[in-house]
Amino acid sequence: MKSTGVVRRIDRLGRLVIPMEIRKVFDLGKDQGLEIFVDGEYIIISKFYEKCVICSGIDGLTLFDCKLICGECVSRIGQIG
Image (cartoon, rainbow, N blue to C red; front, side):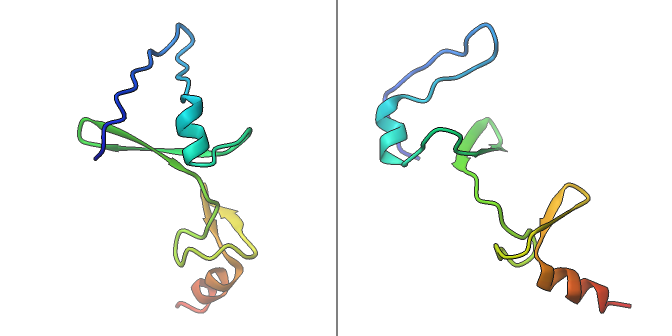
């Protein structure tokens, strides 16, 4: 992991501002979704891309049990059993 040397504080409302330089490098625009992961003591923030949790497809997504699944995987699941 590479350190940027940039330190930001969480404000009283729990918000964290991502510096403009970092937003430019990663092309983070207004309304860009971000996904938050935890790995031990690390908090990892990544661009969010809506995709199927099974095959990573992006076409015909359906929300099922709080997970996105594409139409093809829904069909394949329906064939099980």
